[in-house]
Image (tube, rainbow, N blue to C red; front, side, top):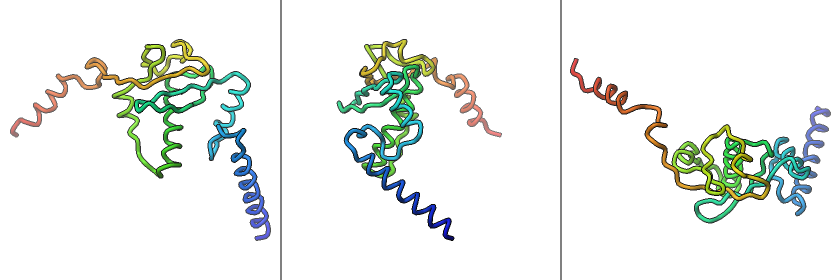
Length: 163
């Protein structure tokens, strides 16, 4: 029992120290509950192997995310998702955002280039440190949908048959 109390006292002291550190204005870009990956990315930013990207939302507001210099479009989308979810959680409690809906109806754009290929490196689109990327409306083409009209027709045609 004594070992448990020592462990919980150490943990409480560590949490108190961490809270005090995170309240320092110098560390204002560190999230409130940072993961090791968050801290690693911020260190990489300071060392020049990561970049900070400003995301212009449709309402005109911006948010900053940090990704590695070798990041792909998918990495940027994941960073945006994490940042927005963290902001929503801290300000409004749990609120579900359908990211599938977001990425179906909008895409990211930089220098009038739509970032459509998730596996493409951001640097191939001219994205650098302190670049601005914006959300733009995007409608998928019929060719990119998973079901063709013919298959849908066959499916619904089968439902109309009387057995």
